[in-house]
Length: 472
DNA sequence: TGAAATGTTGGGGCG
DNA sequence: ACGCCCCAACATTTC
Image (cartoon, rainbow, N blue to C red):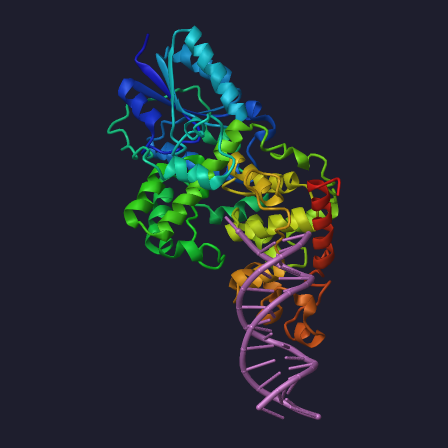
């Protein structure tokens, strides 16, 4: 047997605070691999934006490994087996993932390795606490966020402190591996080249983003995070998703910076990420099935035309269109706006939350099965600790409240840039004179609203009320 | 991590 | 000075 061990990179595309890599580096020569496994992912295979981000992230990781990262594409079960045999590896190390398809696949791989008497060990590198560590005292999972977070994250138990990166990794190359380009992660459309300018992936970029957030964002996080034109949010979601930084690094960096309401709020947002993972782990069908079964017969309306108008940012509601265009153009959407556009799709258009989740899955750099599924279910009202069915955002009010000067909306809906603030979020209410002065022709260079807010709100309320209480 | 409808209060105009 | 109406402004309830 050789002195080769395998470190299998997955959602841990970093060198620092990487328990499995640290272990591997201490055990022998390391064959570092990344496997693009669309076969086992099936319907949960990555979307276009994720792949683009991943491509550049892998490129960065490869560079930091001196070009010695090995790429493969295909069924990881077969590829790991092949690699172990070919290199006579004595051990395989990786950090755990929590999507159902990955859990199943990794379990199978672990079994196979055990049969062949090859050491394998997995670690936690993606969560502050794993789903089986955050159970209630009776062994069941938390269904409400506040006690989940309070008892699991604000008690005596502290998350693991971040680990240093291995001092030295002796890397070995597999000359039969693919090149990064052969994974074909880059989009072939020209959407890809435009959106690439909004992308800074990799561990270094993640650390930089974290430091920028600590310097200029976190100080006003609690209030500022609701305003899409401010840069108070962390912007860390894609880095956390791909493991370019760890939640432990973010958690302790925030706590070290300050222990005030702002850092507390940021940590609780990390908590929501953990809550989503807990939900996904204990209810693997979270991406496909209503967490609350009473929604199973809800009369969603499938309207392709309306769905497409929402996707393209042509709904006639400026704050909605701004958000949807931000998503398409930048691979990102501000959290407050995500809630507004999601509420609009699900409640005003009565379109199934899964249609929205699917679009986000394809368009977001930070697309994350746990967070995306849990958040859509939260907005739709069918999730755990979800928004009550009667909470329906008014896109006019929300725009006025959270983008009062309209910088955000004007940036992504430039055809309305000259409208005065007063009418920016409801252009159809402006007089012909004001509209023409601003160069706006409704139905021509900006759409008329695709639904009546008041009517659609009423329609949603009665449908949801009927579902909640079908007898009355 | 809402919004709209409804209820209450209090100041000002006015006969 | 008084009652009455109007209507913000705020509070409470309901969906």
